[in-house]
Length: 160
Image 1 (spheres, rainbow, N blue to C red):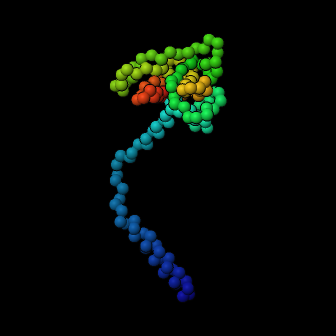
Image 2: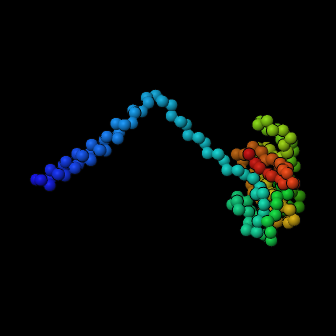
Image 3: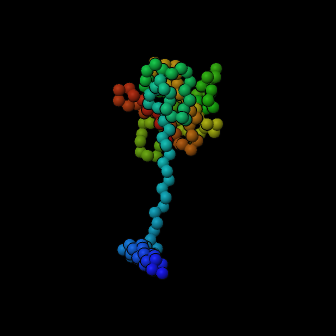
């Protein structure tokens, strides 16, 4: 009987200790607006700025040609209307870059509108001092791909 009494007192003491902290918190606000879940940002889709001996690093890109002996900088890009391999056709359907009109206030952008090409666009990333290149299909949900020249002749090709 004494053992049962001790267990009962221990259980009651534990229940009191567990319930006490709950009284320290204010009650929830009734009718308070709950935060809406934020959309996850799309991962950047861009030509890797360097071609390395270990490969593209981005699994969305396929390397065509042997790996370079050293790290090589991006020198430009070409866009094709068609699937991978279109760039190797005798008369490939190349899409020439043009001036882009984008709604974020930036001007003087050159690149390719993505939405106008129903069959999908193939982005080919070109690197200095090699014939090896990377290629990938541009995700259809993107609006455009742009070319930007940076300091010291560095080029960036980014799709948004």
